[in-house]
Image 1 (cartoon, helix red, strand yellow):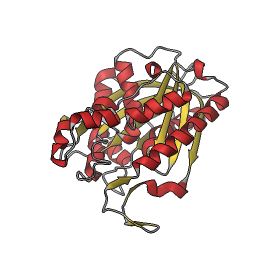
Image 2 (cartoon, rainbow, N blue to C red; image 1 turned 135 degrees about the vertical axis):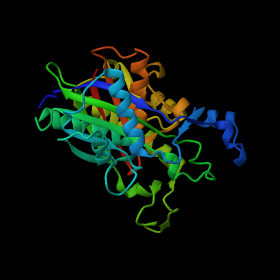
Image 3 (cartoon, rainbow, N blue to C red; image 1 turned 90 degrees about the horizontal axis):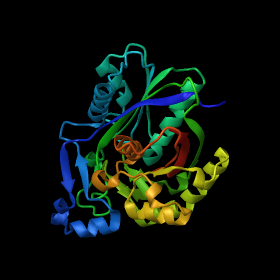
Length: 322
């Protein structure tokens, strides 16, 4: 079944507080050290009373203001996040309640840093099958609230942000060309954040704080993501040269640089968002799209390869036509 959805609006919300690399001097980390290892200069930090739902709502407000669009007829709200305000209610339900959208289904989707590509495919499928006509897809993460700021391996990487996107029925060509997803739950312990359980197998986890084995994750990504991207291109019946923009999860610049080298993709054709916003998990890909859209870099008909990877472990992506 051919895709019949389109992106009709996209907007972002970024918290006001900026955390620079110099703010990590108290744990003996300086600006040059962070930039050399990650490419990150700044990241945004949510306020004390600002959570994933707050940022999601503000992103939707910015979308309405920018596009002068009506969302009263939205019939599904999908939120990608692994930092929800509560176990229940969902962030999507909180967004629905705030805007009082009378006839909308709501769901949160957690696939960590791969979450947005999953969410985009779910939204496209719901529209393509005729189940829904107008969907709010929101990626939102308040990662600063699950950080151990004494952990040099994680605290320098992550930031907070939200992006809202509106998908509707297309009268012409659809958005999604092909998608493909992979997972390896046997390696789940490489990226964790405890909740009801504070133990994974023999590992005792920190209390609701994010932990990762950066070196092993780096090795996993460089080994498996190129294979996944080749499988996705094959499914789409496209070649790398057909892709106008590569939009990977913005984990850190050095990892993306290594990926591009292995895939023989020019960095100039790669959209990333981590230099001034850090690793924002499921938000990083739509944030890069929003930034490129604001700069008028994206042209109608461009082929974009979006690819996420992270906790689960998960990786997967989707090729879209802008």
